[in-house]
Image (cartoon, rainbow, N blue to C red):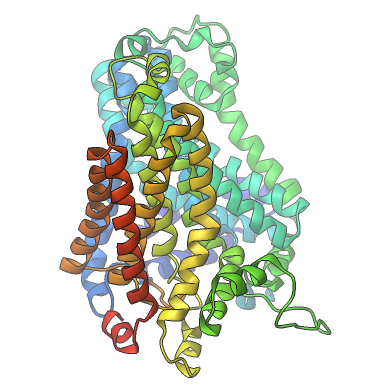
Length: 563
């Protein structure tokens, strides 16, 4: 399969040569990269199981792409107007493809591990950049082909055989447009920003885009009913002809699937071909030069996981920094203070940790609105009657997701081998260090988010909801402490993977779902009895103290048993 892809991407040799690339070097680079991809171990299971799972993981990836593609066919089935249906189809396809590029393939474009082999050789920046671009293009093609099968079939059935035969051309243009647009933005960011600043921008860009995808997936379909979707007309939106998905849809006028008499549709269809070629020329002409030098600069900056102070800097154990004062204020034992400071600094510098945790701050309110949209009543009517409901309990207890997400990734790090230091220091009970790390997650991530939700709850439901807020705060902390006590007794940033398998994984998932559900149901049953809520608050506080005391005094034997 790799030979076929290599043959196809090397067909426009003349174009690559005009753009300044050496085609022989380009072929050799792509050949090696594709061979190395086939030899990578699949991240399913560990040890010898990886070889057995490789074949099935590839098949699983194809199946996932196929079933994802089923989502895109709904506009083709529901919307009467062909231009509008095609525009929605290509918009959804382009949106998810762009997200895939941003979230998964930025590391491929900016991989610096081969610099010791390639950079000393006489390889031009255009050749190096184009090799990485085509490498990602082949990856995308493997994803897009199974993803497009369902749309291909539906187009052939509903719009005729001409649409089915013509479909591969706009599909190819869609992949090229998404690829060149994202890579062009990346190169522009790399050119105007320093290496460290670029990585920061890239991380926040990926986080923001993942939130947009999540919100669009959950909210947009619910905000539109079937009748509105059926009579949707993209021609009524004056800005739509300026979007690439409109240009891709317009290409179907070339085979009479769409009416060629639609205003400017033939010209807009030509833009679907001109635009990606223009992006390619701009990238290679103005952004690709000195690409290798910028990659070297990226690799010379300090890692996001570590920090070394400049030479000559005096390192003081104390200081007036806020996290230092919090560490001393909230922890009596030196081990707990050390764990607090270490986790506070590491979570502030680790981009991988931020990318896993930060999106959850947006997912919770988005999903709350999604639940409101499930009702038959309009969103405005539900908002008006919201203070009369008990929906604030759902919102409050959904905050537990942020706490659990942050805590579950607290033990993961690419530099996990540095965890030997935990076993080298004379630490009597590791529970004190665990407690310091727990407090960082609670104070730095959960508490500010819960405070923002509390302000919203008190504004909408009134001051009488303060008891519900206090009880939810104690219950969520009890839930997090219980999960930490049972399932996450491990040192911070000490493991490469926290994935559990078999019965262990099932039990942990079941535990994570059952505890907040049980606490929330108990809270709901006591909703209209103040004395019962106060009693519940007292009992939960006592239970929290008992669980916390047990977690604080975790022994070495328990850590080894959970390892």
